[in-house]
Amino acid sequence: MIGFKKIPKKLIFIVFTISVILIFLIYIDDSSHKPLPSEIIKETESTKYEIDIIKSSAFYEVADGENISIIFEKFKVPLNTAYKIFRLDKKGQLTNIKPGDEMVFNYLGDDLINIKINKTDTSSLLIKIDENISISEIVENIEYFKSYKKGIIENSFYETAQNSGMPDSIIMDLAYIYGWDIDFVFDIRDNDEFFVIYETGFSNGERIDTGDIIAAKFVNKGKVYFANRFVQDSKKQYFDNDGNNMQKAFLRAPLEFSYISSHFNPNRMHPILHTIRAHNGVDYAAKRGSPVRSTGDGTILFIGRKSGCGNEILIKHSNDYSTRYCHLEGFAKNLNNGKKVKQGQTIGYVGSTGLATGPHLHYEFKIGEKHTDPVKVNLPSAEGIKQNYKESFNRLIEKNKSMLEEFSRL
Ligand SMILES: [Zn+2]
Image 1 (cartoon, rainbow, N blue to C red):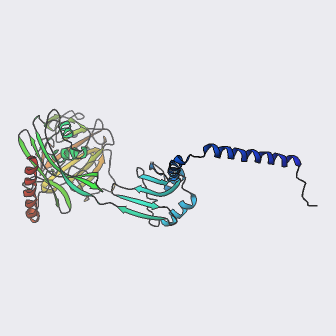
Image 2 (image 1 turned 180 degrees about the vertical axis):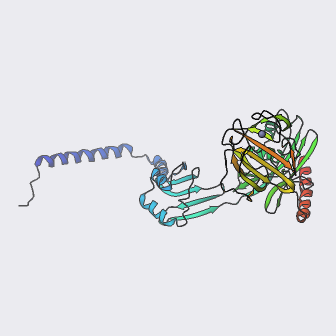
């Protein structure tokens, strides 16, 4: 049978006692804190501050092997919200996040109001989270302004350049542009001078980027070198004031990190054959497997195995130049006879195939049929300003000249 049990008298008593005590406590609390009339305003103000909602942000850098779901979980994005965001991401922009991307989670109080994913300095994704979730791409405009720096070298180029206030990336660019003519380790002297005009990018009034060097003048051991940025055939390059390319048609060496273990020598005793045999190239000692670069643009004439040379690549360049690479451990992928290669492109790897005592690269440089010392040869310049670009190039030179003069008077 179902019925109502009689409530014990003891329980009624306890509840009653607790209630009386509570009412009493509340009364005491209220009376002791009752503000004096003069304090009333103050009290209201401080209450208002407490209600104010605090905005806060959490920053996060995407780590290796992470995807957006893992990160959402870390930041306790509600499942329901995460689901809605994924459904909206039709372009797959969120699945595209990469290690190093910066994410910012913005909160109002405890509520997540938006997530910003910075893809580059100027482009980001904004996920707004309120009743309607939205994903939008934000592209900020970069405005470039000209900056100018000059210096007279004391002790080291790098130090002087840094002291002039030039950003590191511009110092590197400058060394690269002039690196074909000036050896920045051995050729720099005290009192050498540099004058550099370069771009600095701003977005929303904030410096975000350094652009290119526009024009420069470098005085090395009394000789003046000018460099001007110019776009020819949609390729951005640097030319001197006469329109010669600052870049050479060939890299000085086919390996980035190496030392010469045997020089070009027409009367050398061969280390294995022990007879006098011309050493028609230069040997570069390097670790087995080090990437070998084509020193110039060209076409592969031969790729394969030949007895003494081992795994060999022979490249034909313009104007009857050719280069040869021997003892390779292996070849880069997708290369064959007749294939075009670019300057600096990896074509193979250092090894010891053929007649070799240890891993090294044997490199030959031929002009026509004549073997030439690649270390000493006067390397030809890369293609200069073409006829159809001359007029606009000359206009640029006049502009750059007067800019450099104007700035150097400052
Ligand atoms: Zn050799």
